[in-house]
Image (cartoon, rainbow, N blue to C red; front, side):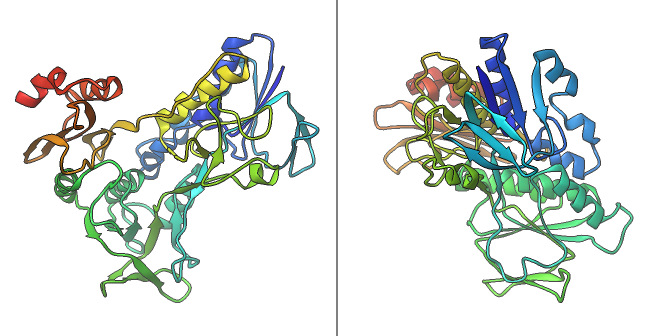
Length: 395
């Protein structure tokens, strides 16, 4: 069997690894339009800050592909997928045949339709190319010309990037249209706790406001918000979420709604074409989560290689550091008022455990610590009763 994978992110790379485990002799080709092997997008902020060199972000070195007998085709843009003849055609006309295809092309940064967004000094961060442009424009720590940054969006990667720029000696203001930070991961109290801790690092916040205009002639000079506030700026970095890279696959006749629609076998509407990662839609839901994309890549590979697979969706869960602050979130965190919640709220620490009306744990949040969070995740996944977390609740 010839397997072709479009996209070398976590979903595509995990799939390739598992396809090789299932079949020693299969031909496996990964195609990416970037010039590097699989790397950690989550750590691009550290590269921008100058903490890491490019090579340190490369998760799979060229030797790994050789060892696994996986062909990695970099700097290759696929322009057409011919489902009838089972081949993908690159921009330079080269054809790549497949027996089964995995579409794992990920997502792209969403740029809101803001007046002035085309000005010099407006960036998004999704790739090494983006990072290099930001580094070149912002200059070194001693540079006095471009020190003021407005970051549009208070998501995880945006907050990490903001902190990285502060460490470069820049002034950073985060503008978030929601009334709290990380609305998908935190409730109001948890977000307040995180914000207070982050303000101590030098980040400034304007919440519940939208950017109407990026001001300046040809270059960025500031932003004007819908609440009447104007903020001077030398750079604007948009971190307003991502959108699925679905146009190519849609043009091939595959069904697409919010994302590329897959069934429980990770297969699209076209036979022998599968999808995984940020771009998929399963039972009306998008995910956009690193660990879930890894899970989906593994399942897609198993399904492609003939194993019985039944994907029932994933519970959103994450545990990480946001500018050095431990943070965990899993399941349903904005519970309805009749649901039972166990909350601990103190300076530099917040914990919330949510149960449904049957007393089963359905969600949890921790800010300022991750001690005990794996137990909360396990309880959510198993739909355990609150009793199993008695020690966490009582301490």
